[in-house]
Image 1 (cartoon, one colour):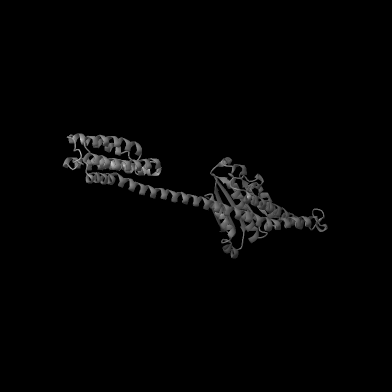
Image 2 (cartoon, helix red, strand yellow):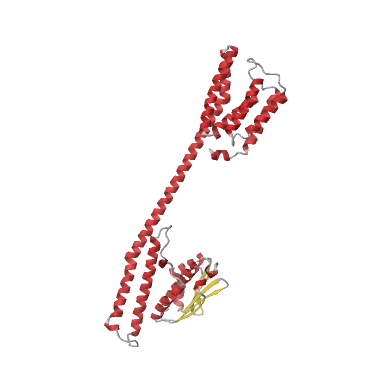
Length: 404
């Protein structure tokens, strides 16, 4: 019931003030005397009664935060009032303290209050009967006492039961959410394992086959001549195919390692994403395919955050691949520079107008643009002066490798 004690505790002083106002009204109009036929009410000034009521209501303001202490202190004051002659306002406040003790107190306190309430009703009934020898008066005293204290106890038990059921349902809901999260994690882990297995069994196997066959072609007698022979260009092309397949196989293995690594595991450093320092492999493959590439790199990759470095490599790799695919043999110019904490990437190549429009809607360009936007940057790809131009701007928020 800790949560119930903390919620609405500032309402307790308002309840105490309301009970005090009702009690003062009863005292002023004279409707406060109880059981005058049993022993009467002592001639106590109304001001004293109101003072005792004020003290009892002050204690009632702690009904929620200190239910046991408030009930014990209130019972003492009501006992003094009963010795002077029981009055209705004091019983009203004591019934509220009883209700609060059962509802906001511990389960043990609730059981104790229930037992004391039953004992009080029986004892008061017996006392009235012994004093008056009147069964009707004793029965009336028992009924009134039961109504004043039994009803609040019963109502508090009902509310407490509902609160406990609500807390139990809330806890059950939290358990179900935790189990659902575990199921999702297990499903993601299974999917990652499936993807890693498919990558290894299908794509990695094909790349390995390409690398093996290209190595075999390079070792054949047909291409075993010296440099400068007519087959020298073919040898370079097959060598570029082998280098590209090996690089792709290395990246594929890195992806498989990352898929196999759990959330709490640290992947092998060899499986780290590729960086701009690995661009020469891509450039060699482009040149081996017959295209010339003019490169202007005015940035130190060591000064870039790892995520920017990796994104720049992927964008450059995709842009060069698109240039080779859509304009084979055409010259390509590439520039990478760091200006005002923004990494500028620009790749140009001549391209015919009839293929510039559909090229703008390719999946590769969408992926490049998405990579740039994830870093808060931008990417534009469009024909400019007869050349297809890819311009990317990647913000560098932590220079000098602060987040590496």
